[in-house]
Image 1 (cartoon, rainbow, N blue to C red):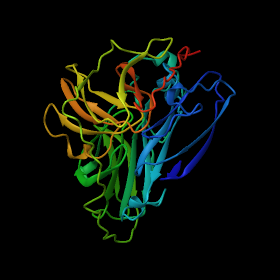
Image 2 (image 1 turned 45 degrees about the horizontal axis):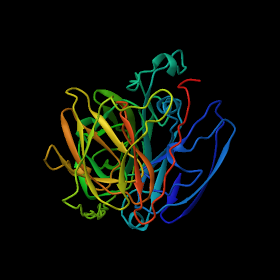
Image 3 (image 1 turned 90 degrees about the vertical axis):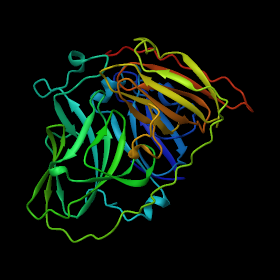
Length: 386
């Protein structure tokens, strides 16, 4: 799906499944309505929801997926996810690849376990997420891309519920990252290795100027081949990526505010019967610091926040990685690490924050002090497989 900034969007969302589901526009900042309350909008079998909203945020790669706690990963495993690309005037004027299927390619990274060519999430289920043994790229095994232009844009989405993707090309071909989750980066960043965790989105430009007709170039995760790029004859491309891509607005945090402490653990998790209850409140449009800590000594955890974007301030008190500038909604927190985030919510409502694979899950109510109201939290009763 492609949406322009300030466009009025109408979606008819029908549930043809034999069980309840919900939906989540990950990375999109849209007002809550009775039919569009993120994970709190139940859509029962055979039911339709008419959803309308106006997009008012910078160009970004977001995505839509189902969210019926605790069956989110099970339904995602079956394929219920899609890209939602937001465009704006700033992106339109950039000299970057923009022709879908010619020099622009979405790359949805997923992994699966096949049982005689069938999926069986019941047998494979793990509460911390399932590591598949077969990579699936845009739903395809062992795909290839015909390269007919010197430069291409790859839109990566980490669509797995557990696996981290450590991407690199053969011969350390450079990838120039231009965008993260919810915006372009302030400046392009050249990398030979990129980490994509569950729910993260990353956009990179690859220049094949040193390759020729008939060459083959492979993209790997660790030592596993994911995609083969088949080089054809192409015209020279001397365009340059702008040095200034985007200027994020950095809100001012009142130094007298207490820093919120978020611990990634399995102690505060969704039960098998209902979503965890509300835990925190934060005033509308009040910027705060959140310290997200991963106490594990072995496991990386991707932390995700609904309803807004954030900016990364530091990792263990040190500057974050250059490709973490800009707006994000998902951040990998490494073992024994604390990541400080700058968080401000633009819309009232009830939103979630959680780890994509640890089971840690909670909610935060964003309220307008000028117009206080009570936001009802639905308790969605659902079983995992039935």
